[in-house]
Image 1 (tube, helix red, strand yellow):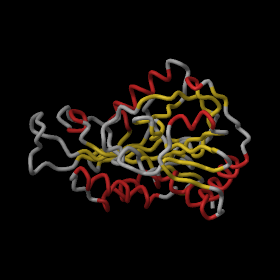
Image 2 (cartoon, one colour):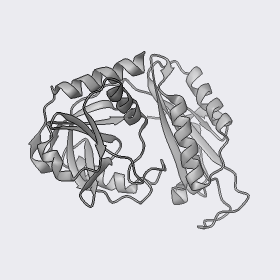
Image 3 (cartoon, helix red, strand yellow):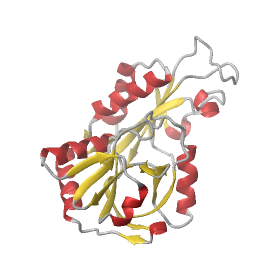
Length: 276
């Protein structure tokens, strides 16, 4: 599965299946690490600087001292030495490899870096989803590898043949398991406003920008989960999904309009932006 996938670990480039890490990596022991997924299409990165800025923000919040110049060089090396036109680069930075497992890390610990390039043909099939409680930690605005809440809820949904989840905290919609959420209610495009419960998605930001440029009806606010019962359509955004429509919410017993005009406009506008 990982054969011939190009990767980098601690500045050394190799195939992914040849890379070995220490069990004392704080990423392994504590999820004490951050990451980004940077997509590219037609041999061009999509908003790479925005991804780097978010990585810098995540690092600052966890007080991980990263070398962004080194990170950019390694990501560009992976990209330029691949024969791949469409795909993404996963890049992770942990606090480092410690001398022993301890909640309090050594003051002289050095960052541990890891990344790989994965081919991907971007397509967005209609998704079947489930609504569930948001059980994640309180700083979802930081893009960390602490994703156990997402993993648990998404796999429970997968057992019901779902592709994604819509999470809510105290009945307020937050986001998907691996994406941000938009929906149309009373002919207005709606999305939850950013908070520490929501990751500021790059694709989300691109789409909001084109929506505002086109002066489409738009509202960014706190929304009760019950509003989705009256939504005419729902879609998710992410670096690998793009703009992905929802066809059914199983535990709301709701089928969605896959031909909604506002959603179709958003798909077209987003695709024009990222391919221009």
